[in-house]
Amino acid sequence: MPHNLEVIILAAGLGTRMKSATIKVLHRAAGRPIIDYVLDLAADVSERPPVVVVGHQREAVQKAIGERARFAVQEQQLGTGHAVMQAARFLEHEDMAGRNVLILSGDVPLTRPETLRGLAAQHDRERNALTLLTMKLEDPGMYGRIVRDRDGAVVRIAEAKDTSAGEKAIDEVNAGIYLFNAADLFANLRNLSTNNAQGEYYLTDLIAMLRDSGKRVGALVAADPIEAIGVNSRGELAVVEAEIQRRVVQRLMTDGVTFRNPNTVVIDSTVSIGADTVVYPFVTLEGNTRIGEGCVIEPGVHLVNTTVGDDVHVKSGTVAEEATIGDEASVGPYAHLRPGTNLGKHVKVGNFVETKKAVFGEGSKASHLSYIGDAEVGANVNIGAGTITCNYDGVRKHKTVLEDGVFIGSDTQLVAPVRVGHGAYVGAGSTITKDVPPDALALSRVPQRNVEGWATKRRAEMAKKKEDGQAK
Ligand code: UD1
Ligand code: MG
Image 1 (cartoon, rainbow, N blue to C red):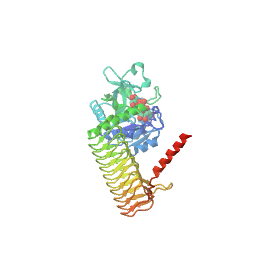
Image 2: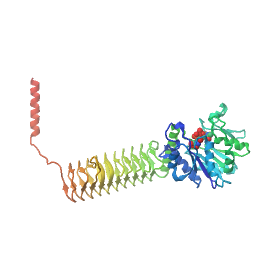
Image 3: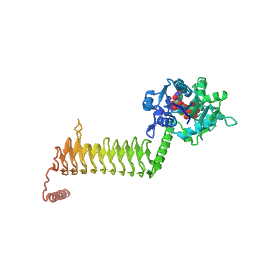
Image 4: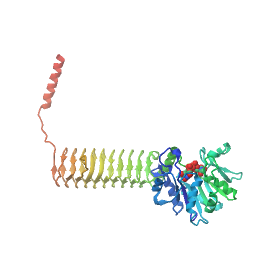
């Protein structure tokens, strides 16, 4: 890319066609605000932080972008040309001699850096004052039409709302991505007017102005029109999301991940997955979820901000949020790991087990139907089916500690705060309200009483009642 390239990103417009309370550049695709992808692109082609033009909801936009950019404020949205004027005021303080300015739209997130490098190469080769990116569309819709002369040179851009019927049929449109010589841009900006259908300062009017002053304007037709699609509606947002998903899955497959059916998974662009992991259909992975190597992620699994080690088996229907799962662990089917769950190596959390703020040491198991919350579970602990930590007294949460090697019989209630010492056993069906010393057996259930012959007697009574009834 040209040395000392300045990047301007236009992001002040609300995006009325989104029908949203949220400004369109903050709508999310594959887990990130769409402007993030444009910032990535800017960082890829220039070391200098871009100038982002903000207006609508500017506090929210500035907060989302943070340190990654400088900001120019456009108080009133008087058009794309007016937006660039605000950024120019910002840059004119600097020595711009011989520099280039790349203008990107905050709502066009799918452009590849290779395409911008192609644009820059053409700009240099043709010694243009401006080189812009265009695309050919079957339905040119509301995009600006590229008007070329008989020799094929670009002469002007006709905005959709200002076009004649003949121009409306033009299938080559403006992608909204421009590489300008800084001097030519700044010299002409101030001559823009609002003499058009929308009463706005159109950045696109610069093309005709440059041509009229004898400057060269070139255009690169994007090989894949998807690179230039703008998010102006929910429909376009869905197209953009689908394309980012497709790219994410392609990248992961290149890195050695198997997808049984890549068309059914939903994976944020922020997720990482190690080689030789197999992902089944209908899996959703969100946020900063990290999955190691050699894992199996079965159908219907939903992981949010969850870290999964190597060789882990996450079975069908498991839901996890803010959880950590250690190497060689097995989770599910239908386990629910809530925030603060941290499972060590080789842990097994089985079907219909819910955990919250629960740390499990190496090799411990809760295989069936349990709730384990606010708990510290040591290594090699066995938690029987139906065990419940009673962690909440209606006012406060209390902690349960199960030390190493503890065995909890099925259907036990552990009334917190409570501690079971290392190596101790709890008999099935117990309600544990007091600490259990190490290596002890705790039993709290009512002793069993058998009444010999009770059922025989009852059946005889029932039979007699039935007979009496029929006799009446
Ligand atoms: C613009 C182009 C059109 C092109 C299309 C490509 C103009 C006049 N038209 O139309 O030729 O085909 O992009 O996507 O440039 N913005 C501001 N301040 C403003 C107005 C807009 O910052 O006052 C920002 C918007 O937030 C958006 C970008 O500029 O990120 C483009 O604006 P938008 O209103 O979407 O322009 P289009 O109608 O799509
Ligand atoms: Mg647009």
